[in-house]
Each structure stands twice: as structure tokens, then as C-alpha cells.
Image (tube, rainbow, N blue to C red; front, side):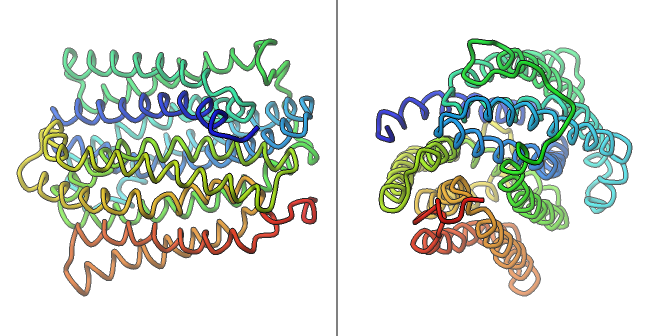
Length: 444
């Protein structure tokens, strides 16, 4: 059941979806770059805020995906459908609250976190944050719905819908930025439009009786029996992601103090790094479904570790190939963002570091994260992720700047060191985790 054929069937649609989603983000950044470095900086700092909020939806999606995958593996279709319904309602309710808070306090958020940024950067960031806040309920709907479908083994539907969504995003973005000259507001309008479309179509897919997961009716209620398995995974994942992305947000404020050039380079580096890492992110998504269904069907011990190893090896090979291809092309790739010479030099230094560490360290840090979390071993993963993020990535970046004057490059060096640290701890955990070696003994 869990072999190369299974991986490929799940992986390729997810890979295509991730390419589409990441590429549209890159295209948006490139289009915004035509407005100026301040526009890239504005979008970059808002994205750092968005990632913190989005983590709440992703955490719910992760919890639902693991719970539903295990229920599907155990042939419990009724439980899977009920988990999908209640998870969707809870996640959308949370997104509405988050969106309302962001809309009302957007000015205060930007000033508090990025008060040292230039006035033009902050004013555009406020505009982009407004559109982001309005889009949260639609993003939450898409995130949880896509996770539910992937848990059932359906990775093609999210892929098709991402294709439509990206076409909407690019078309509207290009029209608003190049023809209407709306700048950052144009990018915000495109973002909101694409999320409305993707959420609507994917939700209709879940109401389709022929779908592997069918939500007949979304009931505004919560039951402990249904939501507990979701929250048992989702709450630690949420804390992990909130603190992780909170750390990234703090790093963005540190970079803001280094000047607009560093902030622009950080936005470009993050955008390009996400593109290079598409295969890794795709495999981490597949890992949740594969490992979750394996645990649900009673696979553990040596057989489960074999699945872990195959997923890690698969990601290392693909990321290695991607890094080798991108290394000579990186200077030309960065040129698409229309950077100034100082911004380009900073971005190139950071990305060369990423290309070295990505195939060697990232799979152990994030593929194993997904694998361990999918067995139910969520608390350990959260503790290690939080400690590594703050002690290595955040404190390391701060010390490198304050005491060694390493500046922008120091931030990205300790970014990579964080991967090495957490990967080492996760690798050690696979040998002793009771969830991996004997899950039935710890089931609640």
C-alpha cells in the first residue's frame, strides 16, 4: 500500500499545486517590484504578519488532515466526514475573528512592529494588510478544505483549483498594477479575488456526494469526541507555528533596522527560497497523508521508519537536483525582481547559503516534523521547534548582528543553523518515540 507508486500518485498533483501557488507569489512580487523597492518591502513585512495568522488555519488543517487520514486508514468514513465538518466551521470562525482584529488595528500593528521602516513602506504595508485581513476567511476555507481532501488521498482537486486561483491572481494583479497603476493595492485586490474563487470552488467540491469526503451539512456545533483528535494535533501545531512565525516576524523587525536595502533583499530571498523548496514542501504535505493513513491502518515500528526514510531520501534527492540547477542561474533569477546592485548582492549571498543547506538539513527538519506529528507525537515536535527557533534562529541572528556585525548574512546563516539543530533532534526522536515504535500503547 505504501510504496513508490503510492507516493508518486499523491506527490505529483501536490508538486504541481505548490509550483502554481509559489510561482504566483513570485510573479506578484515581481509585478510589485516594478513599483519600487518600498513596495517589495511593504509586501514582505505584511507577509511576515500574515504567516503568523495563517498558521492558525494551517494548524487546524494539519490536525484535521492527520485525524481524517487515520480515520480513512481505519475505514471510518462517518467519523472522517464529521471531523471535516466541525473542523471547517471552527477554522472559519477563528479566521473571522482574526480578520476583524487585523482590519481594525492594522495601523497599530504596522507601527508597533515596523515603526523604524520608512513612511512610504509603512503606508503601503497598511494597505496590503487591509486586503489580507479581509481575505482570511476565504484562505481558511481553502486551507482546511484542501487538507481534508488530501487526507482522503485526493490531491488532484486542490491542484486543479490552485490553477484556477493562480490564473485569477495573475490576471487581476497585472491589470490592477500595470493598467490601473494601483501599486500595492492592486496586489491586495488580486490576492483577495483569488482566495474568494479558490475557497468557493473547493467548498463546492466537499459538498459533492461523489467526493471521497462529503460534508452534507456544516453544523454550528462542536463535540469533544470529534474535535479532540483534531485539537490534540492542531493545538501543539498551532503553538509551534505561532512561535515559529512569531520568531520570523521578530527577525523581520531586526532586518528593518538594517535598512530598506536589507528589507528588500529579505523579501526577494524569501520569495526565491520558497520556489527552490517547492519539492520539499510538496513531500511534507504528502507525508502527513501517507504517515497518517499508515498509522491508522496499524503500521508502526520498522515498517513506519522505512516510510520515514523513503520520504526523507526522496526529498533530499529532489532538493539536491533543484539546488544544483538553481546555483548558476541564481543571479539571473534575482534580476527578474529589478533589484538595485546592493539589494542583489545581499540576496545572492543569502540564497547561496540556502542552496547548500537545503538538501542536506531541511528534510530532517521539516519532513521528519510532518512524519512525527502525523503519528500523534506532536508535543515533542512543538517543544523542539520552539526551542530551536528562538535559541538558534532568533537569538543567533541577534547576537551575530549586535556583537559580530554580521548584518543581513548573519540572519540567514542562523536561519540555516536552525534547520540543522531541529533536524538532529527529530532524527534522534524517531528511535525512541512510543508513537513510532508502538502507537497502540499510547492511543487515547
